[in-house]
Length: 240
Image (cartoon, rainbow, N blue to C red):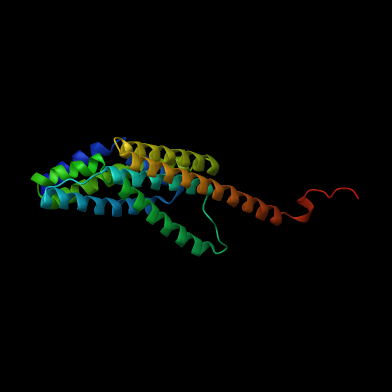
């Protein structure tokens, strides 16, 4: 078990260096609390690698990956649009913090699960689990991935303290769009015309609806900000 744990830790840690998962972890850490991001990654990694070990050790099978890549790409596109739109803030800061942390946890966990299904680290875990102790592979691969992503989270949290909020939001959105393109291209390589057309149609709908929501939200916030201005700061009235 110890040998399997060390082996899987080393393989997955090295495989994660420079991988999209590390970039995703750094991007999330630019915007949100590091401990929420790390906890979500730990949960997603534990679940995904449990599936990998199950298929590799107990079934000896691999799973189709192109559909998972497409779903992951669409999820990244949705998160990019969400980032551009910005989070909604309520009057109750305490309640808001709980709700935002909860939604971020679910978003990070789900996006990492989708991104990792079919990724090289999952395939490596399946392969290792076919010939080694399954529990050691599960623990070692999970620790290896979380350790690699923790490095990226540290970098993202450090950068987030020195960059303007608007710059962070635009950089994060750009990275999420990049992840979306990465996953979609990977999933659609060699896809059937029906799957290709359906995916492109879904992307178009998401862009149209997301763009509309972004514009509407910004106009509403601008009107709310203008309404909060003191009377003496409002534009002077036109002469009678």
